[in-house]
Length: 249
View (cartoon, rainbow, N blue to C red):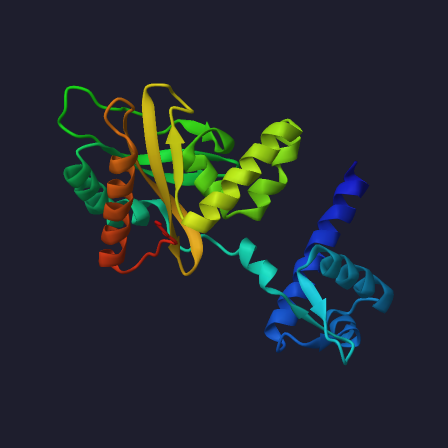
């Protein structure tokens, strides 16, 4: 077991050494350059480069035997914003959403293959929707989760492992609609007494969170859906730092 661990450990080290070297050397290097700089055998370097190329993290130039890092490596970057920063900046927006819609609003963030409500703001009404903060929810069961799913190829690749082909087909159809419209609806799907509209927000073209308005199904209907979406989009644009991909027909 120790020998296997050491082999894996060395492979991981060499992989990142190669990526770091390419990134710091103009991102356009030859196999020989890598081998010489890192004191590695050429056949060993070739194996690492080939594996990284197959995974999509490297690509080879069409006219010369040089390698460069692709944009796929961006998915390994540290999060652009911390959750605390998001909460601090978006709390006033959430409060304004609830003030203008008179319904419950939420800020949700992705937690691996799940999501979690980080903030909620509730109206002063006798009948209102209350969802727990701190609880983790599955992606494929709600409008919020599907908003994350729609803009994450990695989340989508796991659908077939979790659900039946029929359900996967349904979810994929919904995802296409969400990508086109920029928002998701949950009409008595998660809970017969609950309707919800969810809008993913973006920072530097990356989805970072989802804003949601939910209300009792007897009063929160299509006209309220559209109005809530317009309010969320307007407040995000007014804030200026974040973007939406809203397209309300």
